[in-house]
Image 1 (cartoon, rainbow, N blue to C red):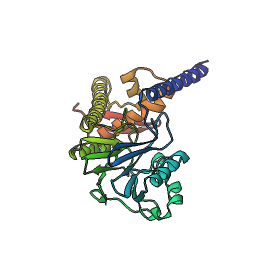
Image 2 (cartoon, rainbow, N blue to C red; image 1 turned 135 degrees about the vertical axis):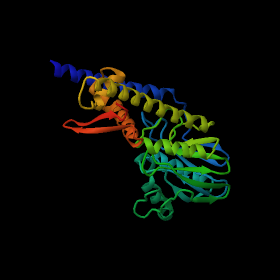
Image 3 (cartoon, rainbow, N blue to C red; image 1 turned 60 degrees about the vertical axis):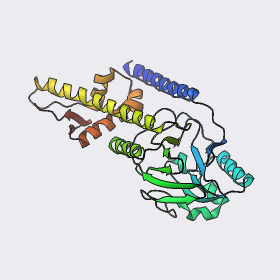
Image 4 (cartoon, rainbow, N blue to C red; image 1 turned 45 degrees about the horizontal axis):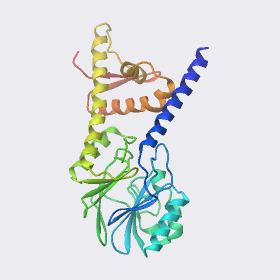
Length: 314
């Protein structure tokens, strides 16, 4: 009976989490498949709307002359390449460089279709940690076409190879998936992500062109919101970890330690396996590793995995 209830509860939690994501999609504004965002920036949607992709992956054509720079290539949907080719032909444009923000498929999946249309672009595609045949991007590297000077900014966190790009003429930044137009991103490495957010903040860009969602008219405010959100979580996790470490030390001879599941329960109460696996455990794990990097937490290896404790004075 217990096993059956657990499965039912897990399925229910998964459905609730799915409904939450669907509800978030309902809140985002509609964006045109192809549209001028400014005089030198055209946004072309990837044709892949979804719970995680919002209106779809944003790709951008930048410049004011015949030659343009393309940032990202969508997921590989035919609608994207058809829209791009039609726009290029209708306006007698060509692509000088292809810049990829990071390796995730929804940003690189359209590259084969693009190269099939324009074979010369195979040797003009740039990515940090490049794939075979691609060219590397370094922090501070610049790319220029008429009306646009693009500077690369190395910003790992969402992905290990993540790059943002600054459009100097507008003092605006193409933020990739580090900062989204709506909501918040998925984080791979919290320490690297916070460092990258502060580096992005240092660039003093006014506006942001995200990898998903609408243009950010106040990029500094959104970056600050992302930093505050992650620091609040870190502080919450450290506070409960330190409290439990100290309180249990009074009753135990050895230093007490706690699993991810125990720490999630301390903070949020009992949760289903589905919610724990999909959302809360990954978030907890990122926070704990960041606290370990900062010297505030450590772990013991136990049969079930890692068991964490705070580095506090006993």
